[in-house]
Length: 305
Image 1 (cartoon, rainbow, N blue to C red):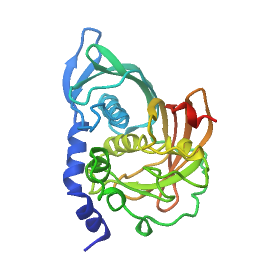
Image 2: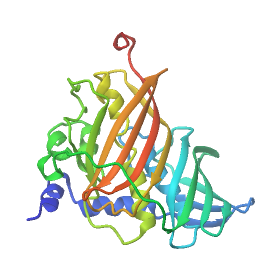
Image 3: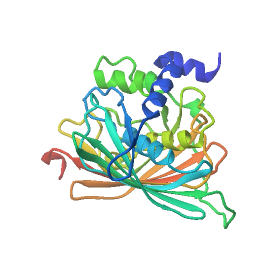
């Protein structure tokens, strides 16, 4: 039995979990609206707290934008703002404005809308493949994913809806290099962490989907580097966390059904906001993407000393 199969057995049917994510990303085209924008509609993943997962909306906006760009012109950057909490029980409408189509670049603006108001506003840029200068940071030396416990092994025994969701229903296999901060603080108090991740089953050979799923997964753990620095956990009573914005750059081709190392750090936290910076490497050491996100992080007053 393969290591992937063993991990899937511990957390449920990985192929079914991935099938559910791909169904959410398979948006329904609705034609053009009165402004000439391309319109799509998508469903949401079930969430224990009823709010739409930000990474899901990021992935869906990337799919919506990508479906209005000619094949072979892949997304290389996106900048988005989370404007309102979304309701995971309601569909989301995506309106795509075609800002520009040049000889080698295209630009798109996407609004994700619920109840007539935007919950996310995003601009993405797409580019044809081209030769050019090439350098990158080196991947850090860390334990490999097969040496680390799965989320199911860490949380599967806890009878709580959030723990069950994290351990059994997430469509990504996540393995923390440092001890995770689900319920126990990091005694080192360092503003950095790293996570191995991949889908639990093979993906279709579609670059749009691979980049969209990477955008989806990039929202999972980036703010943990802020929490670690201050001895806060996801279970800290009174913690209120929300993503405010998200920027991402894709540097090289990527497959999300192969192991990726997500290296994260926080250079600053202030004003009830924390900044996370991430670099994503393939297992053979290629830097495939970079990420930046600022989040709102409110904690009880007694923790601010």
